[in-house]
Structure formats: C-alpha cells, structure tokens
Length: 442
Image 1 (tube, rainbow, N blue to C red):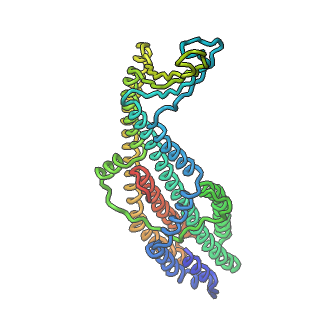
Image 2 (image 1 turned 30 degrees about the vertical axis):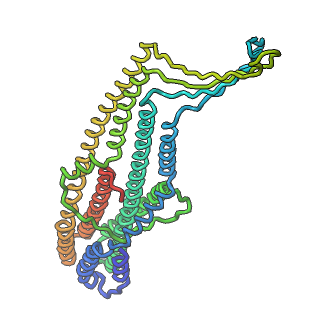
C-alpha cells in the first residue's frame, strides 16, 4: 500500500508544539483516512495488471519448466508408437549353404535363400494399436495434469509472495507509528509528564516489531528460490506482486463442480483410459490363443549338371507356417493376469473418484470459510477495530488509560488487517486448487 506508507511518513514529519494534544488530536482522523484508503485501493488496484503479471509468470513456467517439457516429450513419444503398433512385424531373410551338395536331376543344390513375413492373427494388430493409443492418451492426461499442477504451484507461490509483502508493509506501518509515538513519549518523559514504564513499553514494542520485520525479510529468499525453480529461471531477482488483491466471491454449486470434475479431471481421465487399456489387453490375451501365420518364399541355388535338360534351374518354394499356442496353462494364466489388471484398474478408478470428491469438499469448505472471513473482517472487525482505536485514543488523551492500551488497540487492528489479507489469499489459493480438480486450464 504505497499510498498508505506515504501518508504515514507525512504524518511522522509533522512537527507539533504540544506532543500530546496536537499529535493525539489528529491521530485518529489520519489513521482512519489511511486505513479506509487502503481498503478502497483493494478494489481499484486489482484491475488487469495483477492478472497480466500472473499470466506472464504462468506462461513462462509452462514454456520452461522441466517437468512440463518432460511430460510433453513422453506424450509425443507414446503417440509416435501408435504407427509402430499398427504395422506388421519386420520380415526375415534366411540364407543357407549346403556343406554337402544334394544331387538332383537339375544339378547339385548349393545354397538357399528365403524371405518370410509373419502375419498376426486377425484382430491382434488392431488391439495392439488401440492399447498403444490408450497409452498415448494416458500420457497426454499426465501432461495436462503437470500443466495444471505447475499453474497451481506458480499461483500459490505468487500469492505467498503477495501475502508476505502485505505483512511486511503492514508491520512496517505499525513500526513507523510506534516509533513516532516513541518520540512523543520521550518528549513527555523529558517534561516529566510521562512515567518511565510507558517509555520502556514503547521500546519493547519497537524491538518486537523490528524482529518481526527481520523474520519476514528472511522468508523471502526460500520463496524466491521456489519460484525460480518453477519458472526454470535462475536469473529472476524479484517476484512482482500488486499492492493489493481482492477475491471475487462467487456462489458455489456442488453438483456442477462434481460434474466438471468427473468430466475433465486429469486423474479420472487417466483412470478411465487405464480401464480401456486393460479391457483391450484382456481381448488381446484371448486372441493370443489363436495361431499367427507366416508366409514366405525360398529359392534354392542349383549348380550345372551335364546332360540334364533341367541343368542349373533354381527351384522356387512357397512356404506357409503357423504358430501353435498349445501351452494352454500359459495362455490361461495370461488371460487371468489381464482380467485381474482390469479389475484393479476399475477399483483404482473408484478410489480416485472417492478421493477427489473428498478433496473437492475440502476445497469447497476452504472457499466458504475464506469467503466468510473476508466478509467478517472487511465488513465488521476492521471497522470495529477502527472504532475501538478511536475510543482508546480519546481515553488516552484524557489520561484515563496508559499507553500500552493504545498500542494494544493498534496491534489488534493490525491483526484484523493481516487476517483479512490471509483470508483473501486463502480464497484465491482454494480457487486455484478448484481449477486443478476440475481440470480447467487457466
């Protein structure tokens, strides 16, 4: 909140002749204006700029993140295998040389060369290509899941950075105010109008706030490192976040969200494709009981034979061969294994759907709870905190309470503001997880 900081600095720069009356008289009015300015800025700064900043980070992550690129390459690799699965096995070439010539009416047989092509039983190649196609679909949905996960991580880390920035700003503002009060109290202490304990309490409060600021500053580095890793950009030195964000609270319709999740969730789509793949494997294992056919041609090289009218003629042989799947126990075990795999895939689908429904309910709860807290702090507690600060300031000005009560009122208002920002960030994070569950690419 740059405007708020500037206003606080202006307030601190004001010179007062009477440290108590002049300062405290204008204090409540200026703090009221500052905080109300902060609240009003929340709705006007969000605009297009924060969305554009976040979109740029997300696009950079989708383009550069190693996990996303790896998933994309795996998908394309599996997709390229479909054409291979459709094709026939490679033909075989054979060559033989007779160590002892076989004498025939045409002459001695010296060598033979053949060409063979294996042809799988009808339906095997079709099922094999469909299995590979299902594997390719599964790889695609995994790629889509990685994209959604990276988008959610980028958005969550970006929101963490924003929240840390807001905590730092609010704490710094509180530190500046208490520091200004410290100067006022020192002036009153010098003129013997303020007791020594109030001065000590102010100094303790400043030390605590200074420690909070250092802790907040130390939290920036690990978040920046995580963001660099997500974007795969080691040169990134700063995460750009807006001064304020608001959450657009929308009505939640469970049935519609469940339908979206069942239709588009990447985990469910992968589980569905796995069932399809396992069913095809069952059919293929049954087809493996049928023989494959191999056809070929073979040429036998024949030498010259004197006096034979067929001398030197090379015979050509057509060949047909069949695989004999006579190991019935092996075939039965293969079919049973494929059937168990299909049952496991169906159970995994049901388990995945149940787990996703639980996750969806948790996200809906987080959205509703965050929405409730946003309204609570924005509409009730922050205005009440301002009112309480005003009453406390009047009581302090008339020497009815000590300084620490005024500090407590300001600290309570600061906590309300921090919790409001936390509620906004929690709502936006829950919204991002909702997109992840429903499979919506932002």
